[in-house]
Image 1 (cartoon, rainbow, N blue to C red):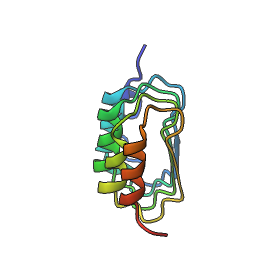
Image 2 (image 1 turned 60 degrees about the vertical axis):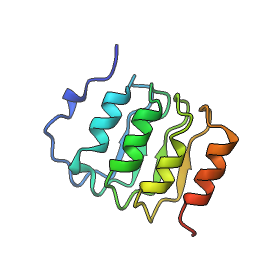
Image 3 (image 1 turned 90 degrees about the vertical axis):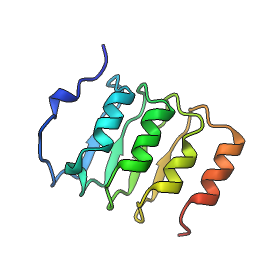
Image 4 (image 1 turned 60 degrees about the horizontal axis):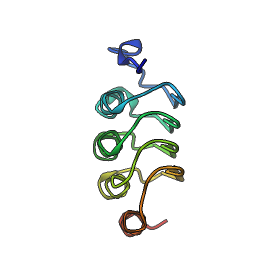
Length: 121
């Protein structure tokens, strides 16, 4: 059974600071929905560990998630390979302190590209 965005659909949780959806069977569709939801503008911690996110979901998060106060993003133990590049290239997360992409399928070339595209601390 995959995660259903209907649980939090149409919710305006602008005060939410932390969202933990670890091991919830969140698919790319759920990640895309989260990334495009404007309610998360004050979110500081987003945990999407151990789900079914691929490059499509991770890319959407990197390009569309507008959590300018985001400090921690955990996408570990998913099916991400190439999209790590997009996470650093398009995001506006100037407060990001921790990005966990461990136990994915990210190759050395993608890791190097991510390192080049991240903002200097």
